[in-house]
Length: 530
Ligand code: GAP
Image 1 (tube, rainbow, N blue to C red):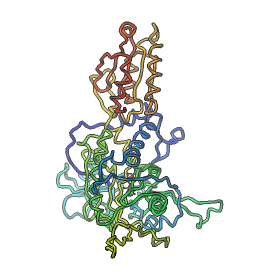
Image 2 (cartoon, helix red, strand yellow):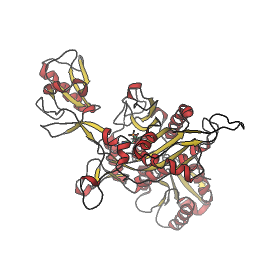
Image 3 (cartoon, rainbow, N blue to C red):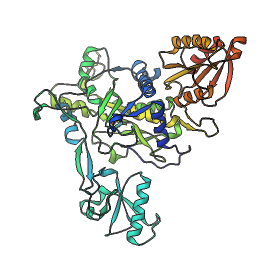
Image 4 (cartoon, rainbow, N blue to C red):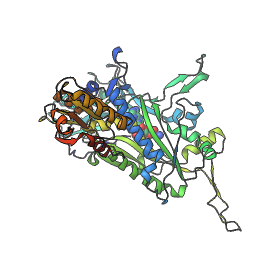
């Protein structure tokens, strides 16, 4: 899933602790059930985070459903056509048998009998002296530099050699096999042999429908929004005028009982996806795969992620599912993966795997009849062709997108009076502007209040327009900087004389004066709205 491609970062490292602390302090993200001590793998969004998440979801909806690809033509030269669906989280459990999730949606899990900690087996690396070695080895969780350093120290002590990072190898725990377990010391253990052999753990959350709660009543919370789309492919074709090629889009919650949720919201147990299943003729599928792969990469840049922090990673042949011709991941350089990258979105060529599986399990025909294809009849018209479409799936994580935007936006500049600020793209910013009276007297609050009402009327649909008269102006600016508000307008003593206000730019901290009547025009230019 996530790549750890090693390339040098060009931006200074940001601290996840700093980012998480700002998120909590300013109300972007809170721990779920915080007053009860939290619950591992679940996160809630505060007022600013909820609006930021909505802004990202709305942009996806605009660019994928309402005006797909901002009007760009697809590889067939025609405008891209997508429609939307909103399907249930709980479906007939046979759906998940057909999709392969009941049998195969597993992660390998390892428990430590000594520390009671649980690990993803495929995330554990084992440190040993290079070459053959039949002594003790030390496990650590990949990308955890502190754990690796501890493992190295323990290995040096055990081998009575100062290994210092040289002549050591990190090998995957899974590659070593079960017999090596007796010689491995777990990341949180003191003795070897306390890790269990990896066991398959199904990631779907189980629940029961109705009052009996017996084995016949088992149902699952969906682990992806995609399957709801495949189930209604035929209904959409039959009830709308869509013709292939076209896509069906859906956003919504998905649930995975992750073995080791971690890295803030990156791997959560409840999260939101934004998925498109794009149906096309098999012969055109490669061109559509390449189109979506490139377009989605461009889209992530348009929400404010810097190109240098994004990579497109094509999967190697041995990473592909048996039904997939090609898959690529769009990955972002998160502070906790740096210098490597973590997955934001996968673009998969799924062939006709899903429609075929549901057709076989449900015994319902899901083929598409295309009257424009097939051999020519005597009258020179095509006879038509019946086929199962191929599917290209750009599948993005909304929460991961929000996390990437928060990480990208977080900026520290010690030369500023208040060094932390959030450089959010104006389209993503939950607060679009703030209007302040410099002081709470001399007619300034009245003028500020009129300007605030005007901006609220014009731009309130896009996000919050704040006003605030408490505390010093510096403190009010600092508050807005941390919230990522791009522009603050201040009414001061000069406003009465020449009808101008100051505009403060969040990123430079610089100010200019503009006429109060020009403020709505200034803001619509900056927010890119007409
Ligand atoms: N329908 C295909 C599918 O679900 P996936 O790669 O498993 O593919 C798609 O998931 C996206 O969903 C990922 O790229 C990621 O952004 C997001 N995602 C997956 N698991 C997640 C988790 N545990 N927490 C947060 N986001 C997750």
